[in-house]
Length: 350
Ligand code: FA5
Image 1 (spheres, rainbow, N blue to C red):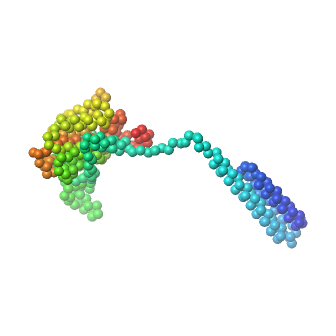
Image 2 (image 1 turned 30 degrees about the horizontal axis):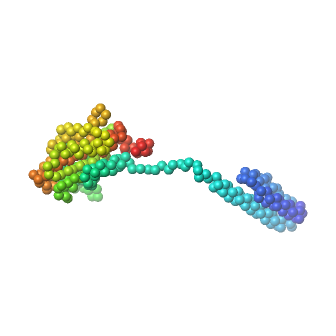
């Protein structure tokens, strides 16, 4: 094959290919053109390359050079067409955006129902003149037991009924670093009740006192519909002169009606707590029956003495209610374990 003829053939192939690529209307037709012209097995360029073999050997270097230039030109034309079609399709996508179509509503998170309940309880008691006090979840025995008139032999201190930290109630702790048993003056535990905060508030403030404290407490209870090993309590403490059990009942009844939004009956049953005298169990009506919401009573004189108050001068009432049970009562939830499963189908109802 003569060199002139080969060059003319390649030039024509390149012109036609550039023309065809520039006219390709969409990605599918561009792809079939690519296969027809640049295809590795039987594309036009491949067939033209076979002409090289038939050249005189003197012409081969020049012919080869020309073939490579042609190939580059054709490939460049293909790339240009590809870029052109891609740009066109994204403009088309942008112009097909319809601002009047209804959007997908983003899912907005919210506070956990127990956190919402805590905020609402603080609001209600705030309106009744109670301020909010805080206390630590890791406590010493003085605040969880001693100052609350729970003596050393009381079963409430049993290690099986409490989460002691590194320690048993006999004051022996394991020193993790040295792996030795060390005596602790007062072992620590996860508080089993928010009554600890009564002590902390009275230690730091003179009477009168009117506080609520809300937070987590821990007990090794088996989880069931009304129990969980970690739960929340709301503690209330009112100390003044001439406080009576009637005041306690009135405050609790107003609170229950405010929180549950109806005239709820509250029932007191005689009970015993070392830190109140007399003590009562507080029940609220639920349908035809009653549910136990917490304990309450008049602050025991020994508790006043433990914090340096004079029981001849002051009287007071205290109560401690279960927050999960209150929230469950309000929303008709029959199993408090639902609060801790973190099942979004349950949580999103609140
Ligand atoms: C107390 O914890 C006393 N500190 C309450 C108190 C305070 C009495 C002030 C007098 C003066 P009790 O152990 O009964 O009492 O618990 C109070 C409430 O916490 C229960 O009525 C219940 O509503 C809730 N509760 C108790 N254990 C659990 C648990 N495992 N899971 C969920 N709620 C619980």
